[in-house]
Image (cartoon, rainbow, N blue to C red; front, side):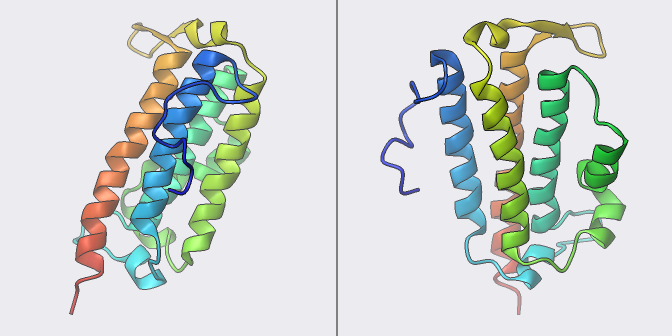
Length: 176
C-alpha cells in the first residue's frame, strides 16, 4: 500500500471521471487482497481448514475468474467462451474440484493471474466513457442492472473473499 493516493476515490489519469472513481475502488480492494496474502508459502496457500473449505490459493484464482467473467459480460456482451470456461471453470465453481485441482502453486502464480486479468480490465475501461457505466441489461431474474453495479459487485465480491482469506490465513499460519 505504497500508493499515496490509495485512500483517495477520485479522478485517475487516463480514465473518465466516474470510471476513474471505480478504478480507484478496484485498486484499493486489490491492494488489500495482496497485503492479506503477502509472504504466504505454498503450504499456507493450499491449507484447507475442513472438508468444505476452499484454500487461499483457490480463492485468489476465484477472484481472478469472477473478474474475467464480468469482463466477458460487460465488455463483450457474452458469457465466457469455451476456452475461458476451460481456463476459469474450476476456479469459478470452487468446491471439490478446486480443493483437488488448485494446489501446489507459489504465491506469484496467483498474483500473476490477478494482475493479468486486472490489466485487461483496466485496458478495457480506458476505452469506455462514463455513459457506459449506465448501460443496462437484465439479470437472469429479469431485474435491470447497469455496468456500474456489475463492477461494484466485483469490488464487493473481492472484499468478501479477502475476508475469508484473512480468516484462513490466521488458521493456516498458526498450525502446529
